[in-house]
Image 1 (cartoon, rainbow, N blue to C red):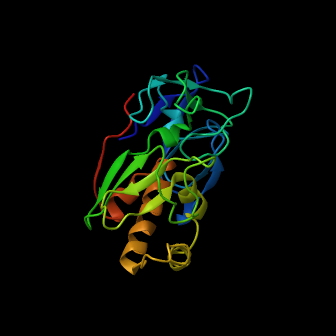
Image 2 (cartoon, rainbow, N blue to C red):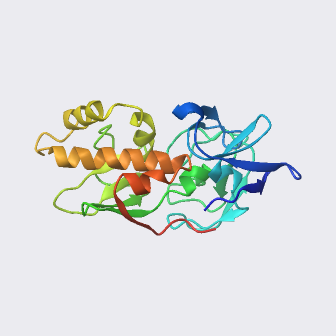
Amino acid sequence: MDPAEVMHPALPGCMLRLVHGDAGGAMTNFQCDGCREPGKGGPRYTSGDLVLHTSCARATPALQHQLVEGVMELRLVAPAGGGVCSACYDTVRGFHYYCSRRTSKGEHPKLHPGCAKLPVSMALQNGDAFELRMEVSHRCTSCREMEGFYRPWCYRSTNPEQRMYLHVKCIKEIQDEAEERMMVRLRERADRNVRMERRVCKTLVIMVRIVFRLLIGDPTPILIEGVNAIVSMAMP
């Protein structure tokens, strides 16, 4: 449960207030003044003209993520030399978590606060389960790219007989598409030797909706999209 008020992480004395819902039922688009990433509806913190994702407003000074070795420290401005978020591969423009310990590929992990809070595992009520991985040895079901120079984190289904893969980056890119269009896209890009059943497509669409809403700090899909359990969250 998000508190009604929190102190701005970067502006001492600036109190942020929690705002629920959207005026007139329409989705409110905004740019977060913390991570500088887009926001779309759902709960957020505001003060005057300032608006922040809940994950940015409540960002802790340090974070221990299960997929990252070492402690990640909150940084309030973009890295001087540029950089991308390890999870979604979008540019880091503002608030982010940074780890001084390099990965096996020589990179310093960076995460948007919203990406840092994504669950590393989740189970749906239909029995499908997914785990978040830093890399996979299979092409993403959406973009057909795989590990190499293109390295955003990926959700992988745990059923070895019906593997499903979705990059966090792809989830952010296709979340606005209508359900049928999204399902057509997934079927078009499926392996030629794999029959992409409608049930599988529907599961992936549910995953897209859930993960995107969690990225912007809205837990509502946990209730309405059929999530049975979300466990192993990154811990501060």
